[in-house]
Image 1: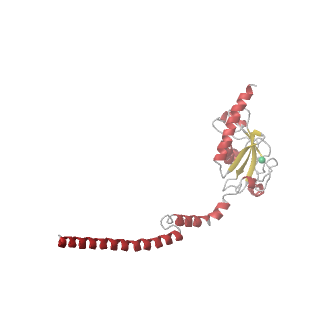
Image 2: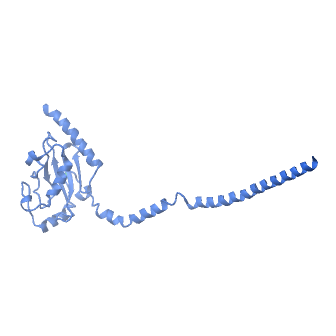
Image 3: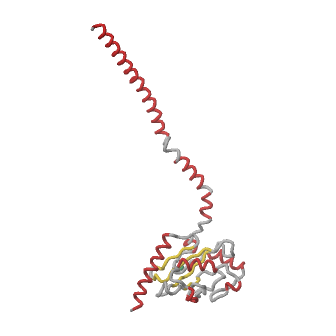
Length: 238
Ligand SMILES: [Zn+2]
């Protein structure tokens, strides 16, 4: 089968993209191939802030052709958004509806980011196969519902797949920075003073050292005195 070689190169490329996405994840989307079919990815995308999709999480399929990356992927929305029809291949510039626009250097990440940019488009720019134009209020209602939407295949909710990192860290960040500062302030100076026990040891050690020094000085003085006395005795004797 001549297609097998292409499949192998496609598999290599897809695995490389999966690794790249896993090693460099985004807070705006998460995507990974299905365990039983590397040519089908399931992705969750966060609705862009400042749009009627803000707060929404949208799950969709990315279908990669056997000739990937030489032919573009297809995207099928699974979560109701009021922006795209469900289970319909979406017509956007990088999908198989516009093969001539696809470039092999692009990848799954490009497709996701492209879809993200397509979400808020309105009017003529938003028209295309798979596009629908629900009222903003309905889109906002669907955005709220989308968070708990569960993919039948992934068996996980969108919120579980793409946790709301913006809310959690900002809530913790109010508490974390002080702890960081306290950590820094406690860590930075600590190398010199170190813990109190060590400081106490140093304080204890210092007096010991100073206590030992006087005897040494005294010993030296006594030696000098003895030497002088010996010298005097020698002069008198000789
Ligand atoms: Zn899924």
